[in-house]
Length: 383
Image (cartoon, rainbow, N blue to C red; front, side, top):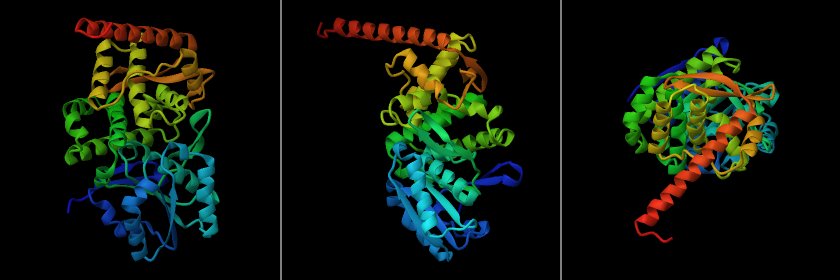
């Protein structure tokens, strides 16, 4: 049996471990006992994940003499609302959960955010454990203690910082992940190379083909390094007052695209993939990085199977959506802009600059499409 890789998140009395081990979900009895779980526990999940893993978790908790209560939610970003949190709280209250009762978040980023927020506010805080089953959750959202829900005007506007007791990552759960969700998760992995580790980015460039094919050893290395980078960033800045903001790279534009699409047309990672390329292009426009940086980011995003072009929304509409993001300060959007691969800077941008850049990119895309149609007709296409 392979021993688990352990990544520590250094937060003083709130410090915790991230355990990464293939097959970990089948060997959780020890971890449950080690955390002192007893009495009652809720397992929050969604319908898709429940089909694969819920019964096994419930059996494991029963063997540990724990009274486990499942809470099965509808899947997808549309569930990330206060009404869904109320549904979780209703279950906890009706089963008379106490402050010592545990909550397990079994699923992707949406489940983790919902369950973590419910744990944060039920009786002013009960312990919870993250058991992420998607690539985005394993490499990013399960670590760091950000919990919360969306508002119709913006993503993640309501929430709390609340750290889990541990994070249990079993990479084998990624085998059941639908392809679209798998590809979307690659965006967050790529993000870590851009913001903090040029060597890791080069590794991803070399291995993106095998990573896309879900090669287990490559997955394990990518997830572990992503967790290490996030643990270091969160340990230095738990509540996003300074360094932690670099984790928002790709999310300034990405969150706006999700909001404009009603959380339906793009899943989170797809929006972040577009956001990374477009924010790099905007950084180049601002003179922060050179064109080669944009090209490398665009190339790896495309090789991962992600989109890189903005949907055709007007500049003003995109800007307005960006203004509802948490990263706005003094009416200006604070963005994260790559200087080179492995290093970014934070800087505010105003509406005039953004719209000037955005209109230019739309015109350039229009010219490219016209040129492509012309080449097609030159090869015998219809006029």
